[in-house]
Image 1 (cartoon, rainbow, N blue to C red):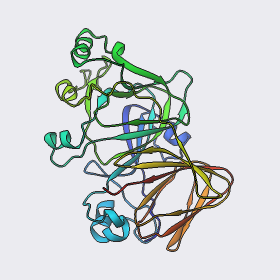
Image 2: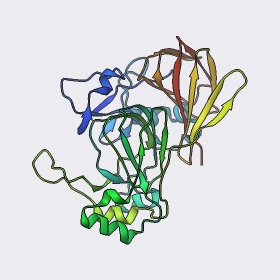
Image 3: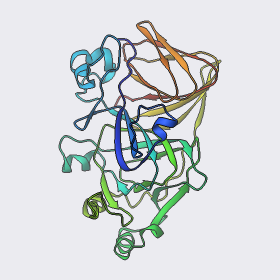
Length: 324
């Protein structure tokens, strides 16, 4: 199978802005609330469609049904693509949220997965902040008191958003993004979110947005405490140096900064490439694609080797899904 690029699925939400267009070249309309670009998705509320080539017009679900071995390789028994890949533009505070783990998700929706995710910060204003976990030693009882008293901010672990940082957010972690942040997000294929607190805001109908306090409290891991940016691990395959920024049971994220071409061996697992900076060509034995800033490409597992040919300096995320 040739490399696959999908049409971006653009989501308008009250906290969005315009950076998905101005900085990542997404085809926005006239509105100023573009919050998310779903690059690869296999959800009832968002299904990726191949943009061009032999499989143009095919949905990701159709590809999995018709070409599971070629596309998924070691994951070919899966009936749903395991990862959801996005870009986010936070132009305002997102609600304070928590996601369930796999076991908890099944209790709320038999068709859903848990949601462990990671953010790679692409742009951030000088005073931008992220909530990542709770302060050390905050108990459930203390947290509930803060919720009821309207002082929940006092229990949150806040960190500055810095360009290049990667924040790993396991399921059961309280989190929120502040305004002025553009990021790439890698997560489990899940759209199950519990909104814990919404900063006192109203929805478009003038009423408070729905919150899910009971479900959130049941899902939070109060033993986790503060979450800080991940520490990258430096790697090399000889001439080419790169780094692994996150490794977990669901995904591995590696970051390549290069001016010279390099090769990726897929080992019968699909690979996702997100170009964060520059321009490049990706070639395989089945075809080639041109990437510009903001482009995401899915390399099918049947691809043995992919060659990345930069046109100047590039920064590229390589996303792999380990096999259980």
